[in-house]
Amino acid sequence: MSTLSTHVLDTAAGRPAAGVPVRLETRAGEQLGEGVTDADGRVPALGPELVAGDYVLRFDVATYAAGFYPEVVVVFTIADPAQHHHVPLLLSPYGYSTYRGS
Image 1: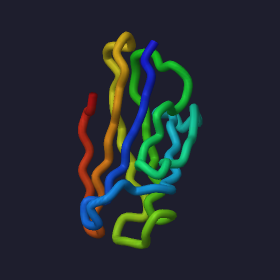
Image 2: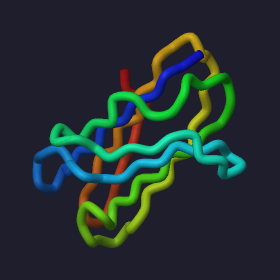
Image 3: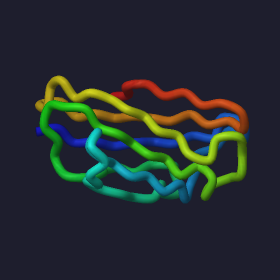
């Protein structure tokens, strides 16, 4: 079973994005977990242990700062549930990026 963490960084300000609500869901919309980024911009454990499948992370970035994107939705696939999965989010006022972290 896989565990999941996330990290949100404000690349425009050059600091972690603290206070961002994050929700983990199945592709069908069932909520599995939620958290809020800490002072370091991290949610170290989000939701239960996960099996192989597709999942959705919803970042309520409007709570952190008003901008062009009020919400960032990241859909990802867990293929190997034996591994830990880390999904960072890099924010700026008019863009964002994400990647499979370690």
